[in-house]
Figure 1 (spheres, rainbow, N blue to C red):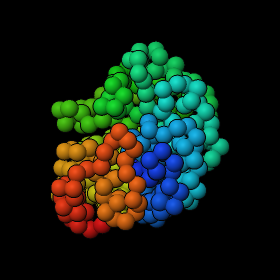
Figure 2: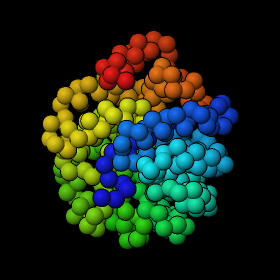
Figure 3: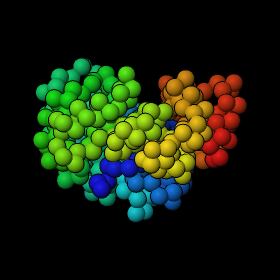
Length: 292
């Protein structure tokens, strides 16, 4: 099983208003996840606010998280507008002891397939770490075709993809199509927490989870139940949280939940605003339903 398989927990990055990481809070959150026994921890993904942090701040976060995670593998997000910045972050992650990289094609000017391929090839040349393609069109406004995924999979270190939920909910057909065109052993994982139990039931290899960043034990129970074909009980316990994720955005919700759970007092990075007070009772109730 590769580092990209199973449950990968993606925590927030507690930081001051200027983006300075709060070392004690980050260490507490990452160590808490590691102690639950997840397969990996993913830092500096969308939940980790990577797009709002400077390269120096991101290097600090990666180093702190890798140290706090102990023996748990850490996947570091290295997406950036410029290929040289992504390359620098990839080299730092490798030197710091990361187990893998997560790469999203960030852009201002819309990117072509050739530009994305060259970007990935440049980053892949920077280290020997396995790379997970971050297919997140809701934030990057770039959607990977299966043809482009297959082309990227010819790069030896590109070994996984983090997919969004299919619009029609047909995981079986999408996974079959991906498996048909991607190499044997290529990891197919999903984000979009509310649909990932269904993805695992249909044969997905990984769940890249926002919720596991705060509720790792519960997310592990849901993962195991889904892989065993019976996720209904845990899916129902998570449903109030899924509803909040879909209504307000998972990043805003988990920041609020982390504050309510006493893990940090950090707010989301501006211009993101904290959720209004009237949502707090719903978040408290969802936390209580999860038992965390």
